[in-house]
Image (cartoon, rainbow, N blue to C red):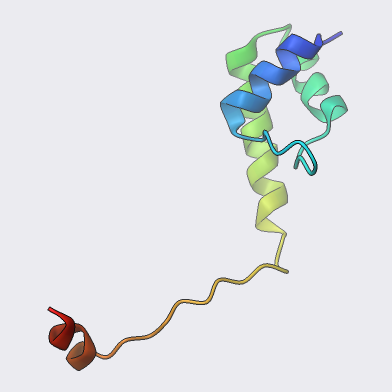
Length: 77
């Protein structure tokens, strides 16, 4: 069974450290740690794959990128 220290180590390695709303649950990370016999580097790789897969399905977030014409960019220089 994964320890809280191991789970925290994987969270830090994957960047899933947002306390109020983590992407991966402790149980999910614990599964990957147990699956990889306690190997943090291997569990981190599996967790990162799963994390990226989950994030790829989040389509409710958009980024607004302002458009500039070439003329505007040249005038700023």
